[in-house]
Image (cartoon, rainbow, N blue to C red; front, side, top):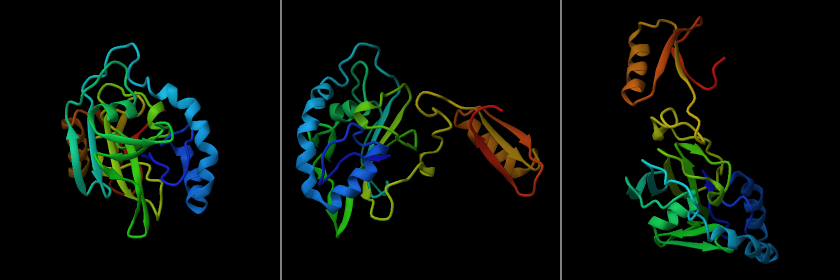
Length: 230
């Protein structure tokens, strides 16, 4: 879930994506550099205004959640958000919440009046995840797919701005996958019939995840494997 705002800085073509991390740190140290990049954002901002208006069927069964403080304080959840045609993460948010942006619309400054910036002397900004996994591109460049669980969270990133995945998003990403790819899930166990193995496998299946179990030739209780087939 990459930061969606450069509070003191300027736009990057990877708005709210992984590529903004070095830029964000540099601009925090030298906020005066922001004005140098602002004109560049205006050149690609025109493209952002059309986000979500493209041809194509609207993605179904999408959910949108907005929280703060690493999910500790829920702000809003849309079980059936308004969707119109081919959406991006950015356009979906703007269609359902009151969003203020900066630098030509490439970065989210605030959602429903709650802005990024500084709080208690620490940097706070908006970040987003899709199906519990940190995004690797900007919100304006990430298409919304059927079943996606999109989560925006405003939190302190002074200790780290890299949180690759969120355990609390279970059963994601096992259920809907990442970027439209649902990878196979296998529960490796020392004893396939053990309570731990059968409990994990049954709970995954109850959540709609087609999990398989297999014997693991090592010490320990077991491990859930998620990825490509060997």
